[in-house]
Amino acid sequence: MARPKPNDLPDLGHLARPGAEIALRVTPGAARDMLKVTPEGLQARVTAPPEKGKANGAVRAMLARAMGVAPSDLTLVRGQAARDKLFRYASCGGRS
Image 1: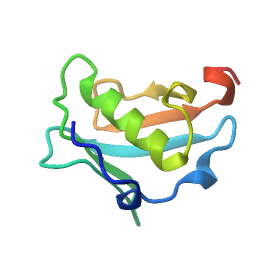
Image 2: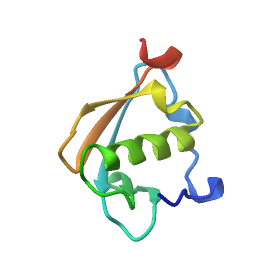
Image 3: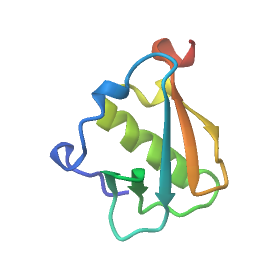
């Protein structure tokens, strides 16, 4: 997976509040990784294929970098096999 440069990611640090839920729409198998804020909400594109959780892991890592948190602090709550996903942020390694 080609990692986006830090300056290519939006600053989502304001979302790093314990218990915050982050909804986004994901496109797996894209030409390059990208995370952007649109009027409709967050959109992520990842080069990882949608198999065996690879795309979910790539989205989780990219979202964590944009938020400035550890990937282990983000839990996929809904959308394991769907394009629309919901992550929950919990500091301290996934505990609320």
